[in-house]
Image (tube, rainbow, N blue to C red; front, side, top):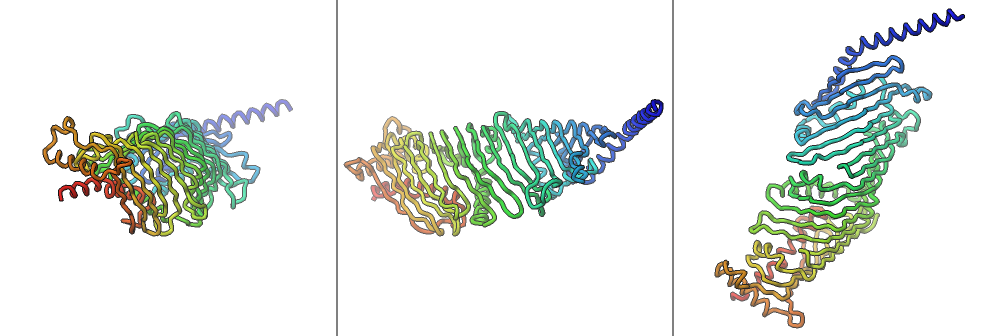
Length: 522
């Protein structure tokens, strides 16, 4: 008996040695075969495998030093995987399914702006590049569990000092082939965690149906914390935006499937934002195009029964935001400091009720500002009401703007404006009432280098200010009614709002000075 067991064990040992010898001999041919099959399935990208280990016990393989390059921009590689393991998922055997586990350890994804541009120029759609088919070519069994351990994602924009990074990425996708659940639910647990821009945090916890047609369905909760906005500054700068500081956080629920699309944000927070939009001709067109595309998309999904977009609460605190006109002479900046904003119940569905917004701040750092608004989902174009109060702004802080558009400046004065606007069915109704108090336009010391005509104009403005002054309150007041069709009723709510504010400022406030100057000349 003992001799027979020795023979059995010896035979097993020989078989193991032979198996590992065969595995060793087939590692390189198998590596070449898998690499060739992966590349045959991909378009525009090429994979290289450093070396491969086949493990006969467990029927698993390890790929080492896998590199993926974009053919149009191969240096640097777009992806590196130090170790990729594929094996039989033995826990699924009891369900009479033979499927695989995949694990990517230390995945590194790197993209720069050239990668993105080349991808956009590629006529092959992203979904048709064959990445999933290439991954499936590594192992003969269908993937049922997919993991990424300690992954990273890096994006470098042109001239960017700090890259955009996601580190410590952990991804777990289970039951992808729907081994244990009914096909009419979201059977596959999904868990994603990552550090964003080092200090920030991303978490996604939900379920998916990877077999749903014509495309997969996902449902889950997303949370973002402490996302530093200045990291996206170089990208924003291409569109004229300067982002110097601020953090973003938010959480909500998402469901995306062929039958339904839901984005329901519980809370969005922006803290300490400091930024400007600089108007330049070269950046204005992309911004205008983006605004138009956004307006068209908003109109398309407005009140669609299968699409719900909702934000229960959006807040911004301690913000300083400005508008810089770099096309005017001289350049000028108008800004709102110490800004707090609260928006509630914003939705694309009229059945969800009316959205409200409240904003407070300091216009030009001095004018106490209070804005309230109500927004309704669009049916026949933008639909909102707006009330604005800006009181006791130091008019001297607006001298660059006055020089650029009215060709004069002031020594002192206080500016206030009150407005009420109602937009519905392609029409706007309301008024703008600007008030000027304690105007002092002409000053010998300040204006000694100005031309005689410029001095005469400023003196005329000052005289008219004194003549039209409301004696009890010493104010110059003009009420400009606003009534009529929108300039473009097909624009979206936000584009219409910006246009109305701009038109009110330049067509109702500054012209008051010009009217008074002409009346003096007559």
